[in-house]
Image 1 (cartoon, one colour):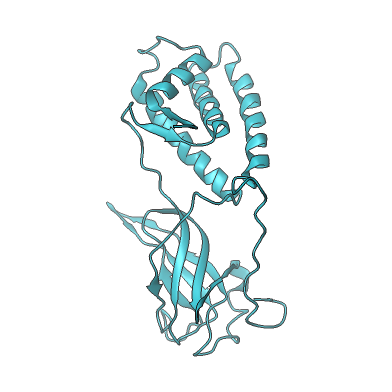
Image 2 (tube, rainbow, N blue to C red; image 1 turned 30 degrees about the vertical axis):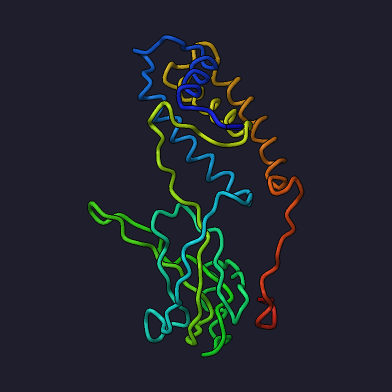
Length: 244
């Protein structure tokens, strides 16, 4: 498959780039596999943060609650998707049309409370709590949708799913060649750090990684049909400075 490499090939590429071929005692495959997966997770988040489509996935369509989490509050509350690394968009079905909600910051949390109505739909969203650890379990985070609308709507959340580590050396990593080049240099940096960088390997890896990242940023907007994807503006439901 084009733009894919088996874990076996990636291990060999990382060892060759770092100059540690055959040093299995100092750099066992198990350690390099751990680093490859950790850096691949980081790269996926970096690319998703660029706004490149294709890495995020939607939740199944679900019904919004029809009451606020606390009687006096002026927003609806939904769960952070299970296994989501980050939230990249929320859509609400208004009639027969999906409307994207706009992200908002914490300082705006009370600005929209006079815009709600029973038969309206939310226009903005903001994380209230992130998922957090509770002894051996993870408690789901919460996302607030503003303003409060109790008429009932369907919604779905677009999110970056947590990466499931690849440990079988016959399995493949799929991605643009630039992504794989960035990944290799990231692992080279980790190897150099462990070896106290006696041969200045880290400096070269940083330069190569920076160069590759610059190319990734240039190409990110062109991954959909080889042309820039136009930005779609959210629905203008309310008036005034919010423009939502």
